[in-house]
Length: 96
Image 1 (cartoon, one colour):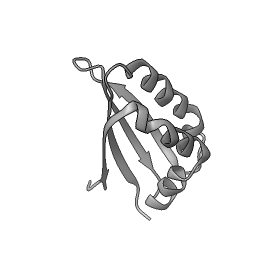
Image 2 (cartoon, one colour):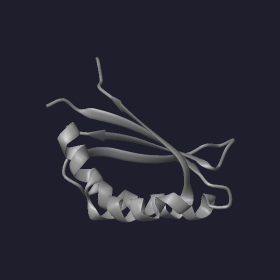
Image 3 (tube, helix red, strand yellow):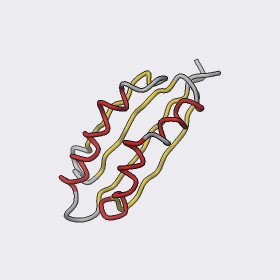
Image 4 (tube, one colour):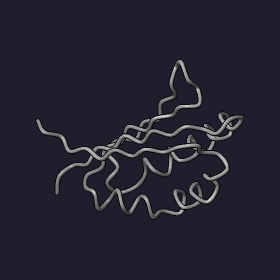
């Protein structure tokens, strides 16, 4: 198993920036406590506050998939249609 790095780019719908931000912050503690989570960092664009970025590392893709099935992620996904304009997830493997 090799470590998996993910970059998740999330753009809030107009008028939903602060609500989305609070929902993303709520994901931090339970995610960091999950098995396999190496790090989980949330960033907000300095020039476009509607743009958020997660930078995360997992011990394996399988453990990240477990994370995606967790109750807190499923709860977020249930409300994401009203908050999120766009999402792009990039999976990366470290070379060196």
